Amino acid sequence: MLKNLIAVVLIASAPVIHAQVRVVESAPQGFGSGVSDLNASAESDVYSQIRALQEEIAILRGLVEEQQYQLKQLKQLQLDNYMDLDRRLSGGAAAPAAQNDEPVTRPAKPQASVAIADSASEADVYKAAYDLLNQKDFDGAVAAFKEHLDRFPSGNFASNSHYWLGKVAMLKKDYPQAKNWFADLITNFPTAAKVPDAQLDLGKVYFLMGEKAKAKSLLSEVASGNSDAARLAQRFLTDNF
Image (cartoon, rainbow, N blue to C red; front, side):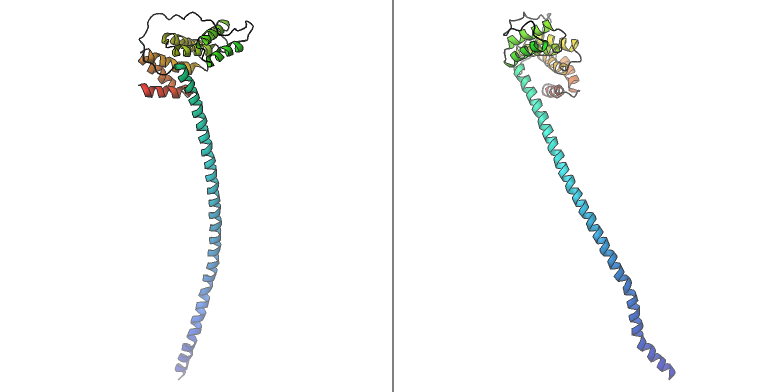
């Protein structure tokens, strides 16, 4: 009888014990939910910061690309202006002329189109010659550049006068004369700013005179540099060799 009573008590108390166990187990689940909310909030903040940084990088990249484009346009404009002047003075492409092994003699100096005062400075004498060149008074420019060299053979603009005299000779298809002027510049003024341009045009002169091996060698040397003349030399090599 006593055993039956104890069994009844145990069976009746079982749901209570089971309910207590469930209550105890539910506490960690509630605590765990709070940690998850905090982590989600932190991740949201980090994601927002990353998105903001990505937007800033995109803006900066756009500014850099725009500046690179503008710089490229300026360089292209500079190159185009140089090529235009070169084209106008060279008079376009010409058929190679037979090599002339006779000594090169400079023609008699023509009369200058403008009078240059004896007291004029080197800069004034050179500017007068360059103005005539811009006006396409080539005979007058030749006379003026030669007068500049007569007065200031080692002056600050002497290398430039050699160069423009060579360019005018190319225009007139007097290739031996052009060769002489460019070679004089390269030899006598090796550190002048016009040396790469003179080497470029001397290479073209060699080509036009039929000396293609010399032309390719000199133009390849110019093309290995980093001047504007280097790009023109590379283009000439690509088009003709």
